[in-house]
Length: 229
Image 1 (cartoon, one colour):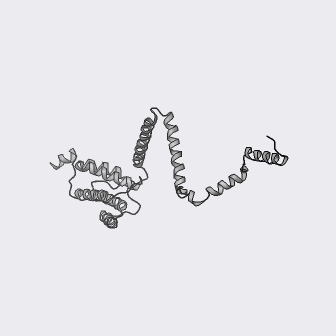
Image 2 (tube, helix red, strand yellow):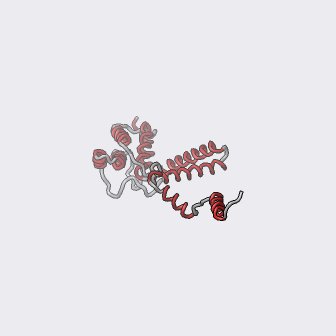
Image 3 (cartoon, helix red, strand yellow):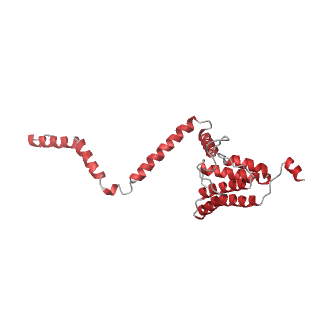
């Protein structure tokens, strides 16, 4: 078969156009794809900024636990046990330090420099209780209780006496109420020095103890009992 010169050229151009693929340059193609993907229709279900932040945080926590469990004895279960033990020790330490221990004769005295009668302390305690100020109510009631024992000469008036000392001394004269006196002194210490917050129940228990002590008879010593006989 023979072709003319024009036909041959046309045929070669057609074969060339069929064999060479038509490619779009890379940069315009990428820009086109980015424009297409930036349309709102493709991002309707994307997480918001807060959700993305939370996802990253939980991924970080998960990775932290995974790393820790890898070195903890027993794996993840061992890590959980260790965490619970640490929390328990921290709670026990806080509870222990929350009730300060003072030596006798410390500067943290029960009374201040303005002496008042037992009735004055009790009136102040009732006023604080009526206003819901339970810490102050407990403090004033304990002071009124101890001042009453001093007024009845069951305790010698002594500057600088602490609540613990007063409870211990009064407990020897009134052994039936020794436990209640120690509990009252501990409540006073907790709200005064330990940063604790008291409540109605604690105040009412201390008030009831104060009222009971008003009618309690002291335990006489052996010498006093012999003289009375």
